[in-house]
Length: 565
Image (cartoon, rainbow, N blue to C red; front, side, top):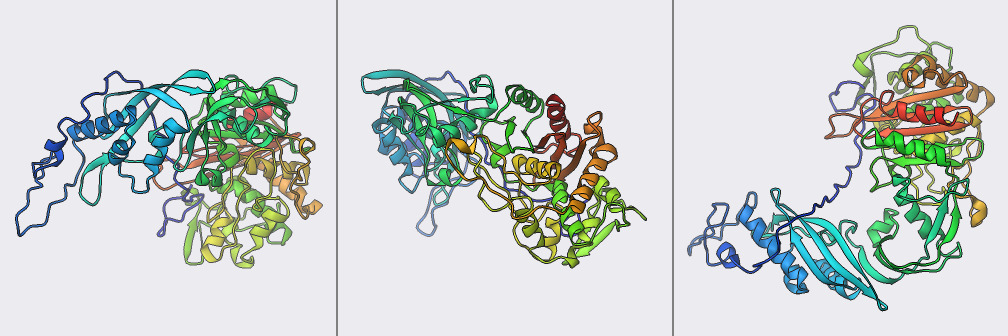
């Protein structure tokens, strides 16, 4: 990683989309009561505000809008008002205690009873932390003569309304249930999709209890294959996704099963031993994700995420840092702009499009080869060639050779298939080193390593295409034998002597690897990346805010390559 440059464009750094914060709930013990008490004293009659500001006016003054943090008394009053109204089914009063202006609150609160069939609700608030109030919910779900208890925890936050400073509950669907995103709804009835029994490649059942990372994968498998696997739907309370969630490729989620359906069987390509190993590896490192595939077939053997709320491994969209140099190197070699054992410039700095790029700690390699630059992850070795490339050169290389960025993968569940947009000037140069607009996830980068190992792109898949007759994505061409040979040489040398050597020790000689990192605004540490292959295995991983890829994601990927050896 380099230091910050004049325009904050440095080696292996890239701004990434900020992750959506999670709603964290806790069990609590204070009983709701007295919702209406003290409200007039807080908001009416021109009385002094709890934060010390005055709302009194004269004929010559405009009303003063209270600002600043809400007080503890205001948090207690408005949260009590909202929770009591919700508990007693007074939808209008509950919605009025929020800052919602779209009727989304009243719609969801009405549906809580009418559509989700949740009754007998008791809501118990906990001790507030600042403006955030945790609470627990208990109720009963009844449908078709069958009832089951429901219990969960949630949280709300009190904010000031901009127009008048009035404290109100900050409205989001997650206030009603932490698994809801805005636009989603709760629904109880015969499940639209029959349940499935997902099994591994050996026929063993895949469950969240056994493999915690697979929750989102199992939800997606059910959504995709429930109607095709021969099962019969049961009665369930479900989160039914709205437009925004569907656009984000989130699957419906079962919250409570009132009566069991008959599951159909869906066979996956996952290896039970490698999936268990992947789960164990990501459990050791916060915000880590990993994918392992078989290059000769494209079968996905393992997928795991330390954070179970979002499948970063399949659906993440992150700048890949220097792991992107695998694709860029194939491009430069094909165009005669680089050769593994020929001299290649690696200066401290390289300027293009008005941006000044530099190497980690401003190092340079004098009289070195392209192989040496690749192994040490020299950014300027790539930036220096930008002026000799067309704006769409990298985009075409990623699509035509590596099958990326065309949004046409069909692995059996929802995925993000990588993005290498056409860019110009400095942004195009930044893309060469995994910055700019380039976005990838571990599945994408594991596929890149697999393409190098096998010599041809084979779309990864979790469920065989024979199950539903879907068409797998293909690449329009392969690398020449010379380009492929040199690319393997670069990755093998990096695994043996470069930035990946520490993680890959003892796994050679039929191996190759590349490290990477990408800084994100607001993070103290960059995201660490690693992609590698060994024999007929290829993997990739990322550790968000982990630091350099060789020491963070590297050991995770290397452990799986060894386990599958």
